[in-house]
Amino acid sequence: MSSNEKKDVKAVRTNIPARMDRLPWSRWHWLVILSLGITWILDGLEVTIIGSIVGVLKDPHTLALSDIEVSGAGTAYLIGAVLGALFFGRMTDKRGRKLLFMITLGVYLIATIATAFSFNFYWFLLCRFFTGAGIGGEYAAINSAIDELIPARVRGWADLAINGTWWVGTAFGAALTAVLTNPHLLPVDLGWRLAFALGAILGLAILLVRRHVPESPRWLMMHGRFDEAEEVVGMIEHEVMKEDHITSLPDPQGSMLIRPLGTVSYRQIARTMLKEYPTRSLLGFALMVGQAFLYNAIFFTYGLVLTTFYHIPNSSVGFYLIPFAIGNIFGPLTIGRLFDTIGRRQMISFTYIFSGVLLAITGWLFAQGMLNAVTQTICWSIIFFFASAGASSAYLTVSEVFPLEVRALAIALFYAIGTGAAALAPVLFGILIHTNKPIDVFYGYLFGALLMASAGVIAIFFGVKAERQSLESIARPLSHVEESALA
Image (cartoon, rainbow, N blue to C red; front, side, top):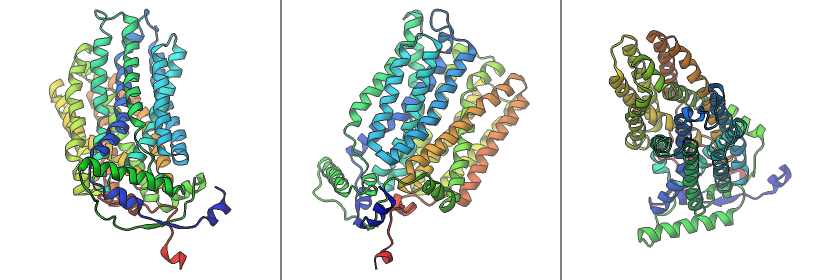
């Protein structure tokens, strides 16, 4: 749509957002949660599989990879995730949520299946890059779609709970690889390939379910496709009333005037994020970097701390991961509802600051030699019960505080920032752990704690009151037209 065409487009009054937000929770919403939320499980699965089969991939009877090549494959996955998020994020705003969440899952499926047939390092590296690209693209397409399809009153809890399922993927991946890489059960060069193949089968099943999830009516509306948007909303309303055995729905509250802009330019995107919403951009940056550094510093060196300082055998590390995963899963599921009741600003600042303080205390106890493997794991599990909800709220925040026209790209941009920060944390902590000095590791923990607490303080000042608010009231669409402009 050219600039002249945009000026000629008439403003249209619509109540589509209000109709979506007034819907009662139904089985249809669970379909959205299941079919779209699987992304986080797949990401957790991928990260855990590659971490669990490192020893197998170095075996001369498999790909015979070196330590550098194994690390390079992990880096390729992260680079793919960053570039995939940025590319597919732009396409999600331009071409639609549904098209892209089908394409990105398709990219993941093809790349994962291809990984199972890897015959040398370069093929494996390429497959890991495109697997990461598919997952990175999923984050942008899925977060935007979920927020636009879920009622405002439960959007916070739904987003946090879905993000927390990343750890369900890690638990499933750990159990899967423990069985498939057992040389007593399967040949050494077969089990690791089946691990990737089974992940692809899970993704294929979800791809079939996703066909029934419609395009976001909000996206259709912002691109001038009002008839299609009305048709989709009508279908959803009919489905919800049928499932709940009701004959009518509450009246939608309010309407708005929209003059569709179509796809906005990069210049307009930059102006929106840096000039119109600079404090929200600062907030998103702080939250993403803080949680990314904390998570990757602890998770990717989890085994190293246990084996180096507590002399836990490599074969037993997985058992210590279970309570850690449980804490991460139950945090968003339990206290996640408070983000919709007490409020975003209060809960985001609390979870960030409190988890930062707990990490600093745990780090000091570790440096003083007052912990053992069990108590260290208990401390980590408690910290991440709160940190998991906080980390999930970072994705929720960047998804809901920017206008619809730039939502997916905003998610992608901040995801890329977080992933970039994540790449530095394991290296830093690996160096600190290598010194075999607990006090050096404590300094690393203290830095991570300061990042988390600082992000929490920024949330106190710049957090947005988004709980139970429509997306359009949190960030007015760029397509919005003031009533006075038509007078």
